[in-house]
Each structure stands twice: as structure tokens, then as C-alpha cells.
Image (cartoon, rainbow, N blue to C red; front, side, top):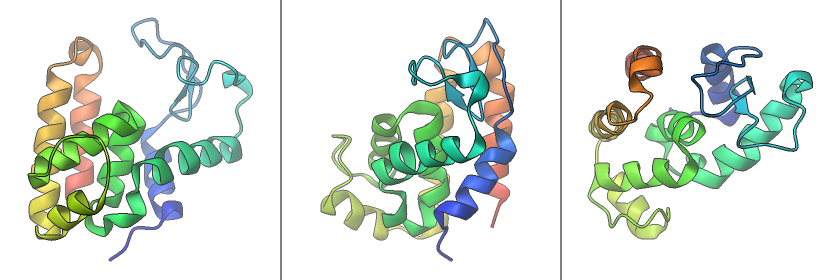
Length: 156
């Protein structure tokens, strides 16, 4: 089944909260998962859900090429949102044994298609978890991140 952006956005927003300004979060002010650090010109407190959706579509879904990897679309999208588009594509490449250059090109897509969707998702999320556990803020936010990855894996 192909994951659409609208469906992926609904799942993502279920994980992302409203306005937060946690001093432990290097992103600073955040609303709907959009951070002041990444979007310094946005009025985060006044950010509308529609504006957040537009940002997610242009800067994460399209930029990461989520529509090109049907079985991994949500996993790639969620990782792009939380770790950056470059890192998300690198994790995908590592998972499918492609050259790690952060470019979602034809060789990476062919390598991804050579895996069953389940195997690709397991490998992708294992690498993603390994990456997250090495982050210095794992002790503050890791439990929530791990639950998010587990929820993604349990989703059909």
C-alpha cells in the first residue's frame, strides 16, 4: 500500500505536539514539530497547522523523495523531520547497501526496491535507532523517540 503525504502528515502530527519551549531541546521553540532553530523567520507560537503542513510537504516529504519509496515513505519522512533530510537518505542508503552520499538517485532506489518492504523497514529503523542512541540528548528525549519508532514499526 502506498502512503500518501496526507496520511503520513496525520500520523506525524499525532506524534508532534503543540507549542513547546523546552530548554533541553536544541531546536528551541517548537510547534507541530517545526523548530525555531530550523525556521528562524517563522513565528513559531503563531504557526498554523496549514503552514506546518506546507513546510512538511515541501521541505521534508518532497525533499527526501518519500513518494519514491512506497514501503518506506512514512519511515523516511519521519526520520527526515526528526534528523534532517540528508541523514534520512543516508540511513536509507545504509539500510539497503547503497553508496552513502545522501542523494536519493536511481541506484539507491533500485537497491531499496531489491528488498522486501518489511526487511527494508526493519533495517532502516534499526539503523535509525542506533543513530539516535548516540545523540547527546538521548537521555532527555530517547524514550519518546524509541516509542515513536516502535509505533511506526507496528503500523501496517
